[in-house]
Amino acid sequence: MPLRDHFRPPLSDEVRWSSFNATWAIALMGWLNRMLPADEYRAQAQIHLGTQVEADVAEFERKDPSRGTRNGSVTTLPAVAAPAATVAAIFPDEFEVQVQDRIGNLLLAGVIELVSPANKKEVAERQSFVAKCAAYLRQGVGLVVVDVVTDRLANFHNELMSAVGGAHAFPKGVPTYVSGYRPVHREGRNEIDVWAEQAPVGQPIPTVPLALRRGPLVPLDLEGTYTQALSLSGV
Image (cartoon, rainbow, N blue to C red; front, side):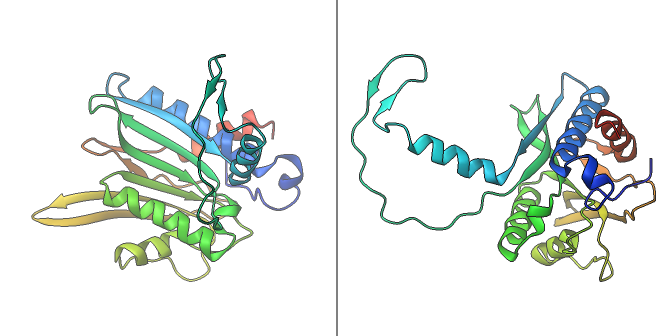
């Protein structure tokens, strides 16, 4: 199924992008759990909207902070001093599939990031997303970024390359793409192998590999899982 534009009518009127991104993440999770050895790896979807964090905090603050009722018991806690300051914070959207190494004490082995419009909204949101991706790579975690957002043109691949000192970049104006990254120590050097493919609307979604830390390169079936997500979404 060729990539469709999820951020403009008519498709944006039929299916909310957040619902579709969540469905695609779950389809990728299921595909990985079918493909990878179950005794070695486990994939899990991590999904939340940044605005939900604010609502959760507000709901918590309406409760009495000195009493806990998690297990039905009532506990009186010591009083806590007022905070020294309150600062603005970014609670980013997260549509992420994580692969854990079951042999390595469930250490994170690989991550797939599905970009949301909110990730690209402002400079601070973009910096936060790029910093998270760079942190994964510096920890030796393989990474794939899937960016099919058409209504905001920031290019995370180019920004990530700048953050880690890489020279590879898409031409200016490339809005949709998929990219994979493998951190590796090779011949005494730390390097990042890069796979980056444009993913234009109306064309099949390219395949890029998810590099699992101390594990194989897994060619992701982005096209097949995208088609499955469309079907599950009823479009």
